[in-house]
Amino acid sequence: MRDYHIHYYIDPCAWDEMTFPNIEKKCLELGITEGTVVKHYSAAMPNGKDYWICWHRIVPAQWQQYLDEFAAYKPEKMILHSGVETELCNEAGDINIPLEDQQKIDMVQLSVHYMIDLNCLPMDLMLYPNLDFCPEYKNDEGRRIVEEWRQKAAAAGAENIICGLVNGYMNAIKRFPKVKSLAHMADGLKPLRTYLVDVDSVPIKRIIEIFEPLMRLMAEKGVVWELLNEPANPEILKRANELGVTFTASADGHMLDSGWGPLSKHIDAERFIDKYGLTRGRIEF
Image (cartoon, rainbow, N blue to C red; front, side):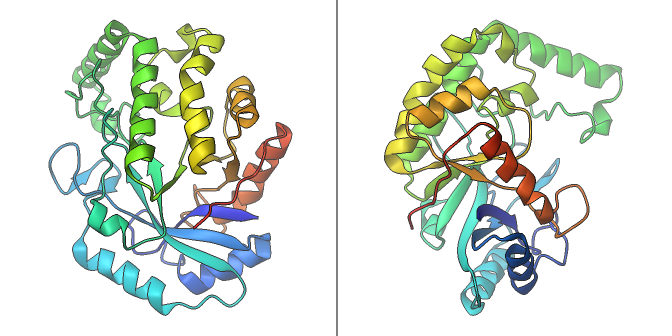
């Protein structure tokens, strides 16, 4: 088994136990023989500050510490790769790590941590509309902001927004060879559902048509589609599989055995892949 999305203790979101020796030990217990230990890397935050919601702008000393500790660690019984989890920023395919630092690692895990800047829906609202993470929006003003955003998304059109997201992924893959995996994908629509886009108003056949160029590009470039154990439309996944996309399981591990994102939950994602008969992939480095 493989897991290309394991977090490292240096980041505030990961527990102190997520060191290389502990990660290797837990992976071997779980049957994972190859993995990527990622460092969060955000060159900039949407609000222009050092911190936003759950994410932090990269601290150069911590980045160097990660690189040094990865170089110094020699795994005994598994293959470990270096990498970052970073953000897709816009429809043009900009990502939140400069090319110079991409060259220092094996791979980029590309996530959508905030609504990307789209041609049809410019980023003009610094909002993460998940009230569990943003309790400051649990008031009349917060609800007004959320509703205003919902109306803007509706005016832009769900189909246009889906097209914009697909364009962003494709442009990033074409521009940056270190992008080896698309993270938190579910059926590809999870980021848009997070941002209150009414994707279910678009017929599933049309959604698949929009995604097919991305699916073909991922198959051509060997970019894997990451799956956690979470809801996803099987029709989209099966079409991706038919077009040659391969899939990888992850627990998005931020801790070893307990907490909200334990590495030990990896097997649940493997079972999800088996449930739909999807093809597992291995990244070529």
